[in-house]
Image 1 (tube, rainbow, N blue to C red):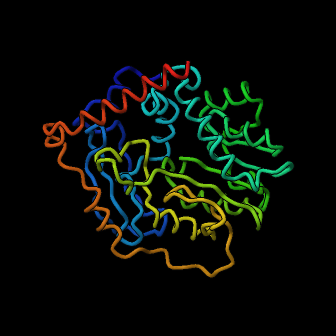
Image 2: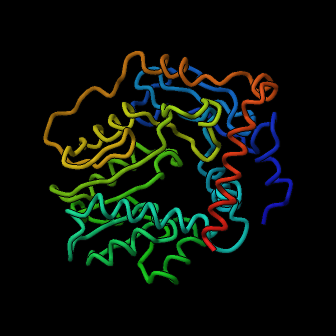
Image 3: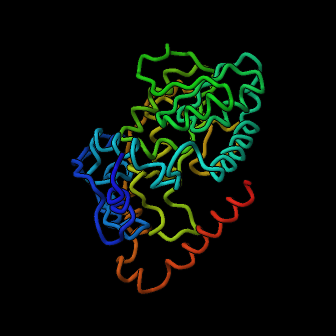
Amino acid sequence: MQSPRYFLNHFMPFTGYPYTGAPTACNLCGSTESVTVAETDRRLKTLKSIACAECGLIRTDPMPTPAELADYYAHAYRADYQLAFAGGPPRVHLKRSAREAAFRAELLAPKLVPGARLLDFGSGSGEFLAAARARGCEAIGVEPGRDYSAYARATHGVEVLDDAADDQFAPGTFDVITTHHVMEHLRDPADVMERLARWLKPDGVLYAAVPNMAATGKPPHERFHFAHVHGFVRDTFDLTARRAGLVPDTNYWREDTTVVYRKTEAPPVPIRAPGLAQRLAEELKPMPAAAYLASGAWIWPMVRRNAKAVRETFSAR
């Protein structure tokens, strides 16, 4: 159990996060050249984010080590990121997860037929697994968060693994694989995408969603968070999929970085996006933290987030 100071270190503005980390090459293309995108995050804490000069993928620099990231997710993530300080998932999360699960099940309905084999990678509290099983699918989840996986098993009676190594499943095992807001949390998202593609049947589909760093209507300051060690835009998400041998399936609705991919026999393409890193550095550059604080621009986003949390908490009762 971490001390109260450990959690305070994740909220106190104008300070760094309690980790050391190490520089890394881009997980997507392997380049070590980069452009600085931001020096602070949405809590006005010191957090450097860089974009790969070759392909544009955004990553935290220095990147938390595997041990540091594992410690964060084991002891601080749910409280830090979702305000879940003890026990299982809060009711706000459960209500939001149920809505998202219903949307995902409806989108993938053509593939969610009786007998279809489905993997939900990052299955959380299990709402989508339950929705898929209700349609007759053979569904299994992977969820490293022990409280959430335990809740999913106890409440929905679904099968959930704590982790899944590269050889956990044979190639071509699943008709459908989904991963919802998981890739941005991983040190090796491009490698994981390749693993999921191997597990997919030739005619299967992969639903993948991550936050869009280039989304409009949100101040650049609000887009960076310690839990998100990688940041994607439409271009880099599609490049990540393309490296894994996947392309968008035009039979399904898409919204920027919420995509249904399918396998392709097309030859590989260069994993590069000339000029993207510099464009992202210009578009996403936050104003200096002190100026942002003095401007009062942070007040409305804070009020909006807190009002939403209160509203969802009471409506979930």
